[in-house]
Image (tube, rainbow, N blue to C red; front, side):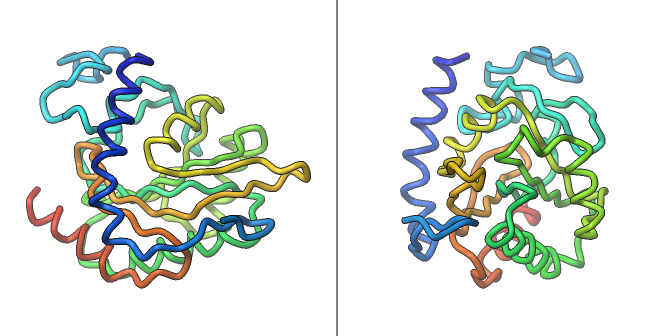
Length: 219
């Protein structure tokens, strides 16, 4: 799997060059301070090997195990079938992460005409030690995140770092426990391919909304 992951990372890194030309260049920022089974559920294939509908560029080829805010075990491949907005946050963040949530809600408002089953929003924690499923559920409720659309995920640190690398996300835990991180919202196709990324805080949602609408018209 490690060999496949390296291949997937190289492929996505190459494709992101074109994707990032659409994104306004901004310096990374952080919350504490600114900083520059293996078988598929339907039994039709095996994760780690391209299957029907999943290309070599799909993040859903990763075999890592995750837990959502309800404590349910899942793999990323189970997100397949709808367009997904993905962002990485941590719940003790007091500056950037609340703004990321606000940006995601603005994008969600621009897609009100679409059904919940068409679009999902995924938040991945960078702080698995503190962000237990129970903590993620509390966070979702306190931020009024619709559980039929929003999925909050945690996993082992290695799995989180692997996904972060593929999303071009950079983060580092500081001595005071705060996490310095970049701020990126990613649009995944229904098959888990990176279609669009918006980097920074308070970015106008129009390009991201239009990217999602374009995907939905093809489904």
